[in-house]
Length: 125
Image (cartoon, rainbow, N blue to C red; front, side):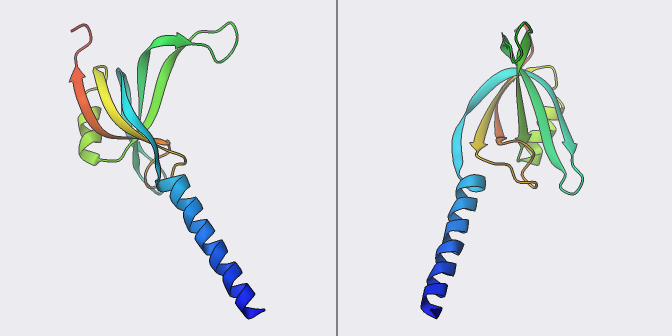
């Protein structure tokens, strides 16, 4: 009975480690998004993280008979990147991001985490 209990506990612990690793640390996807940077702010109650929003070209409708622009909400993992983005609100940016399957409080509120800036240009250029 003790051997069965030990094996059962080991399987449960390994299962939890695999689940947490896949859910919160495995990079599900990555890419580059472009759009007009709306804002980047530092916020949070216990964990202060950088959160931002970018408006992309095009329109979509979540609710019938309404029009809404594409918005990309993201967290920023690097303080230097966040500070540079804070100084460039309103500009067209290309941001490299990683997509996780879940967010963790000290990384940010979003599953999309921006880790670098590809380019920044002024609108109309």
